[in-house]
Image (cartoon, rainbow, N blue to C red; front, top):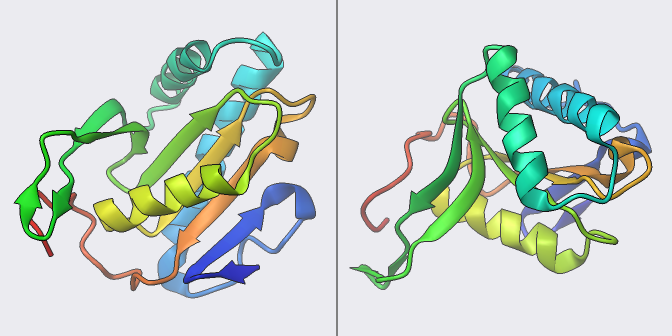
Length: 163
């Protein structure tokens, strides 16, 4: 599904994850590895805990799998060329490539996807994962969000200056 420059792909719908340009494959493979790690965390801990517990456990699982992760990464936000005093925080940044937004809520709402899309736009990243641990099966609460306004060859460095 495409809405407002983004593509939303819920893994529970069984959409073809290999579709798309060959350039996307490294981030698709990495996002698959992150989803696999999240499934392991969910199988061990189950639903119903605080988001912060899942975040800590997922970081541990990613470390065990040798996947680089930054937790609660502060990112400056610019408005009309001026850095705002308030920065945003990414739940997780995986291998300087994939933004992960974690939730432990009754259901994913459109605002949660919009939040992740904003993070992708502001960090100039293409792929994000929205993972809700408060589901009976994690695949029901996992969504890939694609910032289709970016070319896959765009710089992956977080911008510390305005565009």
